Image (cartoon, rainbow, N blue to C red):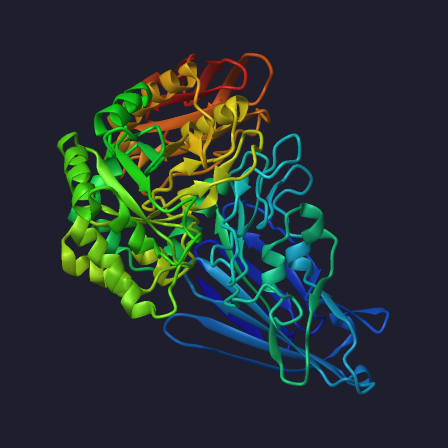
Length: 609
């Protein structure tokens, strides 16, 4: 750890346990910015900034150093520099903050006096960021907006969809050596909920969406300065020694600090963790309703489920397609069910005798003219009380009032909320403990859901409503590759789209393996797209148990032929045994590496212990 300033030479140095930098603020350049794990100097002679305005590009060297100040307290060191270009009425402040542990933070503030009386388009480039390197050519580069693409240039990591407000999951930029070890992790903090670049003074929102190396390397990013020294750009650098794996794990820990996940840890909600195969059926559909007796045929529905390994939950969808043809509300349809809510309770109790939990749907947009949030919440809780169901499937929702959760808690423990879309950031994610991972198109594998790995405590079964046979196979592989549950939905608003017998057998096998190794699959530190530098057509997700020494590597062979891949670096070199626990293939440990063989376009899981 160090901090020294040389006023006569107009330089300063600062360093911590992962980084070292030297800045010549008289010349307006970073002399060196290195990770201590590289054993050599890196990122030499980078201008502090470039500004593009009025059809010209200005370097920091075109500005005059107006002031420099510094200070420190018990936790960090600070140097603030101000540069001015009077004839263009432009000023730039650059702040370096060293936390003395593992980060150096750069903050840029741009002041524009509008020399022509109106604002002109302004763009900026930070050479330290755009030219960041470890060894130069051959460095591995993970853009924040799209860190991994397939050889077909398809995004592999699918981010949470933005709704009214943008997601707070903003992956870092990661640059490391070709072995995916030594390098830099760069966080680009943005607290804005707005997705409109013009409305945001801070440019980080747009940079977080950069999905290619070119966008970072070549592009000047848009800024919106005025005469207020607004925060224009911010970057938090950390030196890393284990590449993408370390960077992702670090970021996940930083992201999670803003959340209270106590709801997920409640003992009464743990039952959902053992649910792998979920069923979605229409209450009056032929899958599970006997139209002669007017009763739910629990035995028939669960008998069908045995082909998949057994349904763990059933969602009984009540309203469609009748809701809206008259003045009845969603609550009225439960009363109109043959035998009313009492008959529904009998069916729920019968499901419970078989160890199967029951969800009912909630339709937020079916609000009567005399209903409000409070009365809707009361009806919401009353239906659970009347039927004994185990929770709600929240149609179209990614948010819910806290009062709804509180009303359920007042009823009885063990009630689950699951939303159709991933919960939005903040409170919804804290109280809606599961959601669908629904995709509406059959994108080819490989593909992983980012939330599954950022927030592994939030279980999100995959589901796709309109998929036919080939696309259902993709759906199943997507679930198995990322080790997540799946929803079986075969009656799509009256159109029958069943799974094939071979697909059912695959899910039976998968459920058995998932439950056997559930503590590993549900561990708190999984890594998506574990780096395999020598095998571009092989993809891997890594799962580690919180208390288990074992790990499971989930491989997907994207080739059209069998793969024989050796030299796969072990995450934990102490492993000495390997075994394929799912799929067809072989695996053997060779020193501190792994060799696997597997069929084309298939997933295999390898247990290492």
